[in-house]
Image (cartoon, rainbow, N blue to C red; front, side, top):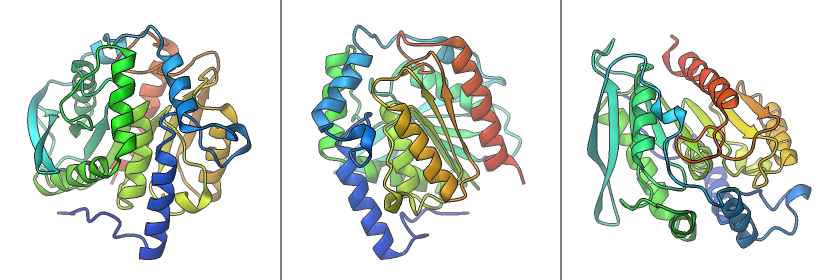
Length: 304
């Protein structure tokens, strides 16, 4: 059994520096970082406004990503996995009905800016069908947005006070590797959750694999030094909230680290093109991203 212990795989000085830098960048939500030319002059409010524009008129309705059935029958249940600030945190856990082993590799799924919706639960079941114990965590304390304005405020509440979210993720990892004895652990998130999937890798250097769907990117090399796990990312060239230049800089940072993952940039699609919820879905890009995601996790969480 492998228990996660926060930042145990990194020197104390490097860990504290990386986390402090990450927190400083956190206030920019799903936009670009302020340390690169493409992002100079962007204030946190600007990034929030850009993201809001990407979701203008959007609604948290199911997309084909969420409506697809799992490849094998699965079970799902709401479950308390953490206690943050004295309050129990309820997520959604899914597993195959007939698992191949008692201790499956596990995934943490991190919701879009809407919150832990039924669509995120459906995507969690779909991922479980690939042979995982999957926990959809809740960073909004049980609240779910029904319109972009509400989603923006919920996301801002996390950005303004990120400590509880970090505690939430640490406990989620300990829950999966302790109670469910997961031999390997990965993370995946969309939009707001894509940013937090990246931060999960900074918080948990023992993480085995990480997928980012168009989340805000941290570009400072010092912050990424501890990013030891394979990373796969998916971005749209027409996403106004994340500059193409920043995606390419992030890819070059990973290459310099010798990271074996990959960054995928899709032409002609914008933000949230593979989200479980919303009106920005692009079938071709989303299906390609799904195939790459499942192959990536199979390689780094199931092989060997």
